[in-house]
Image (cartoon, rainbow, N blue to C red; front, top):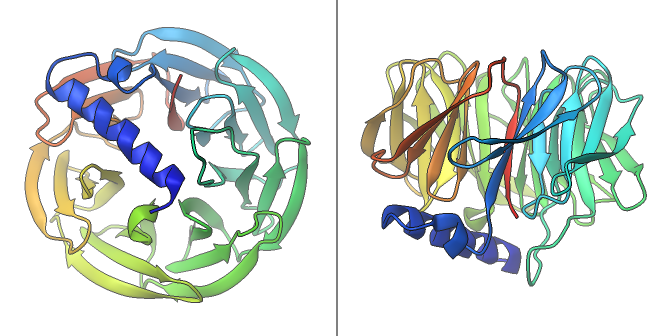
Length: 330
């Protein structure tokens, strides 16, 4: 396990334990968790306290924002605005815009480079998908420039960071494109994977060197293991009768799949075996996890459920349609 992954796991375990015993999880984890939610209709990024959802700030961004990514320490937040062809970089601690990357070919997803630090650091590099160009662009945030680009195929739509390997899902095919980003400035294509069906969700767990996918209009989940030059399929299993809407990785090595009927299926990452079900909200569009909480992103609301039993719940309404979600610990 890399040092960075180990540190993140420790922080999340500490937060989860704090929540489970009724104590202040964020304080025990050594920081205060905050969320970043893009609001397309308002053209803003909302900064909220977690888990209660108190508004800390609204930050104006270019165009109608969608995907959001945040560094673990919150110092760098990226917000993609596809129609405007722009990515806005924000200081999540001081709630101010740092710069705007313009002339981007419809950016549909953003992610930060995974670095194995001794402590939580501010990542220098980030990645964005340019759907209009079929490219992956590497952002050098220290110098405010695009460091490199590489063609990844038509209609890329989502990135999952698995250590030094990026997995990219495409909108109109079952192709999983793999890119070696060690170092980030010299991305290199690896052998891709044909999943056999159009994808609804993609999530990675670098600790297991794996990605998990949900298939469109289906209750099927599959795991692929990164083998370096080539990847291999580990399992494919039907977990739900209803189509799946989102996937998330949670402690301890749970995979959570949300179906469109509001059922949350908890599975073991290693073998795909379902261990329990929770009743969640209807209308889930995607999932996220922070500390001991599962975050269900609905069209206008965030619903938070304590993992793994769902006993603790919270709801955050922002009064507008939601775009992307990310979180950090300050």
